Length: 616
Image 1 (cartoon, helix red, strand yellow):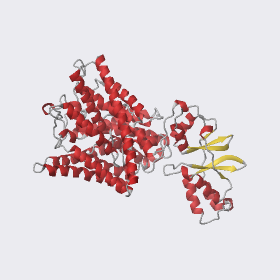
Image 2 (cartoon, rainbow, N blue to C red):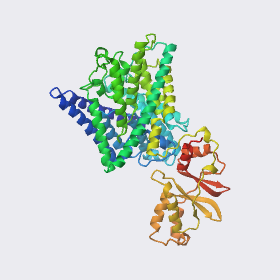
Image 3 (tube, rainbow, N blue to C red):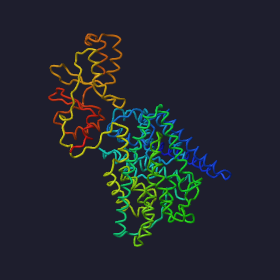
Image 4 (cartoon, helix red, strand yellow):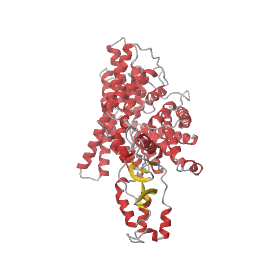
């Protein structure tokens, strides 16, 4: 656990250094005094070049490194399988791709991608000789470490151990072992403290434990007008969260339809789309027009939360090297500046999320929420002087509530408290976040669930109360089996029958074996992929109709492949028990037996469809 924390934190520091240096280089192009047009062109070219590098590296080395990785982690923790998601190639592609993608200046974050990195590191450490004995074949221990690694990703990204601990619980969504709590707490605290210590030392901050966005703000006790204003803000942010997820779904589906209509290779279309999104980002974020539009998401969040006024004389002075101090006013109006920032960041965030490169969404969504909260707060303070909460407080609430409404995670409120080091308004931030989460759920799925569905991942959703009456007899499907005495032709028929159920993400799909057809007692099973390899090997040696029992050497080889069936269901087994077994056992299928006789099969895909089906 300690080794996982140290390695993850060191990679995080290295990534931050690389991204920081790229941003300094990027801003140097915007400050060329001789040629404003040349500066504009170089700014856009820089974005396009590094975004393309990120996409090319991801596509060539490991496409599994694209995106945040959180939908896939949710899938794996629900008992699913995703090939190559924790490989060394994915780790390399994630680190290089993430550094180039964020350093290019696109509107993206790194929280989700960092969680994926932490999970890859934990998986690779588990394969080392000293730890292999503990983790081999132990799904429970693997899930425990993955849950801790998800929390570590948050803690080592923000220096927020408590938020990381809560997020590790939230992301598992279905079953969380209380025995994992100590492991998660140890990993998130050590990782968060170590990252904050190294980060602040590298920035020469006065305190090694200084918050990333220090906000010295005395939050006055709110009265009923303030509470009502917070409720309105929560509803507004929930609506924006729902619109964001709906817009993302529309964008992804439209992009797919466009790719089908354009007669080019899918990879070529991907690169054209990447260039389009990068050019659009470069055009909008060039700081020569309105400097605040070119701010990185983290720096924009810093200024929105920590500056009492967003004009140069009182603007926060903690901007990173290479990032100019900015004036958020347009025509002497802070409202116009904030509104322009919100209108431009929303589509840029969507297009960045549609690029197949490593990246996350927390910082951009938090900055967008902070801008909405700041605009709301400035408006309230202007129109209703009796409201005592300053505009910064609403910005902090927005920074916690909009990511919460988008992702469905309450821990985002704790992230923003730990980032700012200001816990005075914790109850108000959580209240605003809860309202946002609820309103967003009425409009759309949360963003990670929407991505799960768009990508068709083998995620097993939570059970709803209306499904609790279902049993195995209502879930089972007709089953094709092998007899104890069978031919090669029977093997080929079984492979053909189950071909539609099997993919690279279903490595544990089993083909049942019975004693004889007249008495179909289940005596064992064989993995589909092993049966396929065995059949392919035997096709060159024996005839299709020859009984395998006549070939002792072949029968001996096959018997070593036959597995026992530890999990079986009777027809009366409730769906709650079936769901729990599929999640905790990482099952791809299970058999239904009655008095030992095989009567059906339940596949993961069939169970998923039944759970997702809406009953009227």
